[in-house]
Length: 432
Image (cartoon, rainbow, N blue to C red; front, side):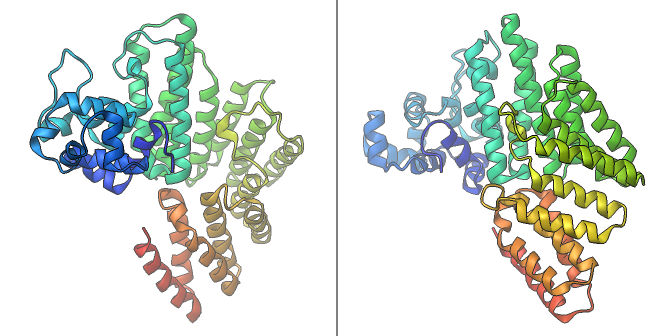
């Protein structure tokens, strides 16, 4: 767990306890959770803040007089390294302090709003004069979103990303800044919008995903900052490949991303786009075009990385290319090829670094093995995915694929498969 910096508050507020505390307007509980996450006892917080341990105890127990003292709450917030708004104290001196739970709940607006308050600089939260340091903090906030996605998945993180994207878009419209700062602010806003789309997609919110990707394209067109547009088009191509009859749209979107990237695009990006295009060709029934696109992908994979890849492409490698080959092989009815690709994907992924991808690839291999009649191995592979399900619980997309595999096992005329499927469903329901 992070124990230093404002990231502590973000992590705490997204836990079930944190969400419940925010919903209840329970400032004392929020203080206790952040204090404990930092590894401090009440006396340590009291010493650092300049108050008595009894005062901290009264705060955490929610005694009315203590939690209405905005000066104390402001000092405690600064000691915990969070904005006073996290504890329900308005930071704008022109607004009255928030003194009751009803007002506090309305001001805080939920854990997502609190998390964004912690992550983004004040000049963006209440748009004013925005400088280069503020934009640097916005990029750090976006990286934190990626880390939260890795830890919790799209379902848990989407609301934070949505709120952050809206706040940044508002800052672009209402803030004041130099032209160079403005361009970088537009860049980070577009990148955040795109990631909000990805998290919505991962959370199985397809309409919200498409909304944010279209918003990304609109902003990048207006601002002339193409990087996020490429990412959005690549993500839209993947979403289109999930749609029955979406093969031609997948090809179109992948090619549009490639055209936007231009001739100087980095190899790993071209690799991803060629793989997405290959899936589209396969779904459209053009096996030769799919094979040609995968051929380009493998050539680009052999070139390796240059070292200047954007961080959203950190995950891409042989396992992900193999996973794209699975989709194409299944679309063209090549079961043996799909099985081979699925085995390569699962063998290539680092289960510790990318645990959710490991669950995804294991689920897909299990599904293919079922279709090919290898039921006992399918049970073993799917069992391995279930053992790691806590790492993927926040990804509605991956959980849905695992459930599909389990359901198919339960439909087989093979008693061990039926028994396993029944037990697996109970395990998934019981897992946190």
